[in-house]
Length: 168
Image (cartoon, rainbow, N blue to C red; front, side, top):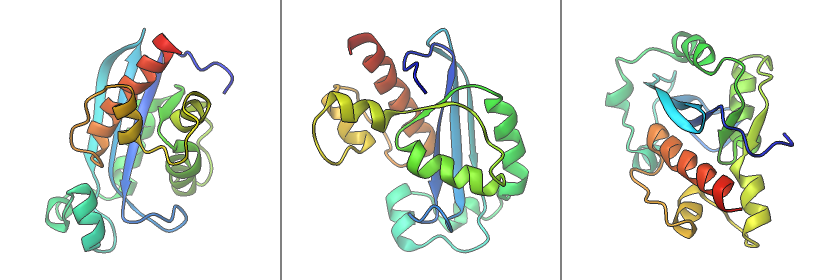
């Protein structure tokens, strides 16, 4: 996307069962709907995967197998998420290389929304290597709560994006 200064958009984030986008499953999906630079609505769902969540992912995300045991599967959650995002521009951290890849695989490559990846912005602003959302937030003096929980990461990404727009 060429316009990095969207005022109406959806910030989203996924938590998954692993780090390989071609095989992982979604265990949490969240989004913030933004109009005129202000959050007007939130979406957040835990998702029951077909396989158990590994101990490593449980420790990273704080999402346990017990937490998702009675939750709907992705086939039930994904239509609600797609309805929530509509045709909006999607914003998030590293979504081009991971989150969008996962979603497009699950949606049989039908997702066509434009997107703004914070990773692309940060590479231009900060001449450094690894750029995790928590690091970016730290550089921008934005507080982080519950890293690797989808809705909290959406809040952090939203605040980072708004700060980038106002200062860079």
